[in-house]
Image (cartoon, rainbow, N blue to C red; front, side):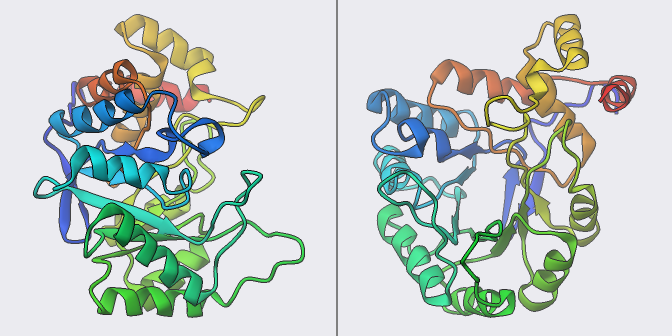
Length: 293
């Protein structure tokens, strides 16, 4: 795995073959993923530049903003370039306080998909992830099988090309594979948090794309971050790279099934993220990072 670069490598995402570094739209809205962006012109420029740099996979959600991320994507990129895979997720909404209440009923999942289609201005999404919510006191979600059945119906109707699942354990993934034939999984995963390694390995075995969220560690204050790990900092200094590039490059080296969707509202940060594709790590460097954490 010496001197590997990933600029031309692709991974199957349903009917699409996408490059291994895409773009996540979660950081485009304002603070707390609510309201308009800090700088609307730069947010639009980031989206256009991402596509110029070869991004062909954009991950979004109607509840980013809400509505804001999708509206920015449409303004910046519609009519969309051929081959651009737009992927969204359903299973939650936003409230006036910035919370993320669940919207897990089959009818709510359908409404979420329809809202995404309307605001993005497309007739079909490349994939939609069913986001499984963490347990909430006083809320009982509908059976997972019923949710998957609605996603299958949406696919059969041609509204989505592929079904994904997010925040799932191995048993839920097995159920989703059996009942829905999923094309992608979005779970928390990073150099510092490999809790879902069994899920990743199952994705590898089944040819399913694995799209980690929190790829550089937790976004919450006070929680471990890959960019602050001593081994990562030392290797970044040795390579003349940033700590974020090292953390993202490790993911690309770790599994051929991993697709990355780092997000930003900064042009400079976008360029930095995209340069990860050409950051080589040797087998020894990959192994040393894993041992260090």
